Figure 1 (cartoon, helix red, strand yellow):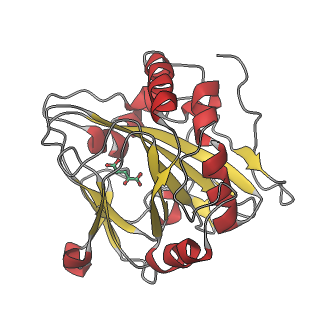
Figure 2 (spheres, rainbow, N blue to C red):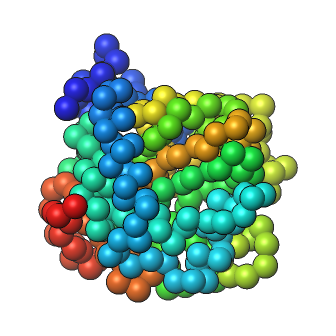
Amino acid sequence: VVVKAEPERSTQGITEAERDRFKADGFLGPIDLLDADETSRTRVELERVLRTTGVAPSPDPAMSAGRLAEMLDTPSGGSPVPFIECRHLDSPAVHRLCTHPTLLAVARALYGDDLLLWRSTFLHKAAGGAEFRWHQDWGGVFGPSESEYGLEPPLSFSFWIALSDVSRDNGCLRFVPGVRRVLRSTPAGPGPRATLLVDESEVDEARAVDMPLRAGQCVVFTDRALHASGANTSGTPRLGLAVRMTVPAVRVRPHFPGHSCVLVSGRDAAGLNTTTQPPVVD
Ligand SMILES: O=C(O)CCC(=O)C(=O)O
């Protein structure tokens, strides 16, 4: 693995200054994960994975037709969501990416040695795909009506890995720095699984920071980070993988039948969650 570290970043994690920035802003990036060769190899592997349904349990049909699908809905229609949820549970290639040594080093530097991977989602924004409006991932991104889902207590952080170049034109993530407020959020549409969005009069968009990423780079952000992504006005699709982690002291409510966590670092002394072994055979 070739790690293209910034001069002051060590492969053992991050610098004090970077940690302070993460604590204050709620996000940190871009972080180099994969070099160009690894990126193209990974793309080929992942495209193969995404053509299959895999053996991991997919979200139930309501979820596929609900908030995640909405997020990916495009004028041309169609959503790959049922096939792109939690593929780290069945694909070694996806699991390898979710546990890239640099990613884990950064995660440990921010949250300590004991880490659970509880979710991963490929986020495919087709050409012409809509913007994803301002929200926080607080509580595990599910709505309050879904009492059986979410994280207790809420503590989740995400690495969003760019699998294609991600620019302002094709819908890069945007963040408003700050972690002190959890904004009241309301469902964007009908149904219990509608996307939870914050009241935009509370968002100081003038302070927003765009996070364009080269393929192979990622950004890490907390569940309090206020974020959004723009519309894809380019002619080509945008692909990312969101890798969601927490610590073992948090209870992760299963978010679809058969859902379980993977211990990706350290030990699980709390034993609150169903855990499973990572997949070994492609
Ligand atoms: O991929 C996107 O456009 C939005 C992703 C997002 O909001 C998230 O990963 O929490």
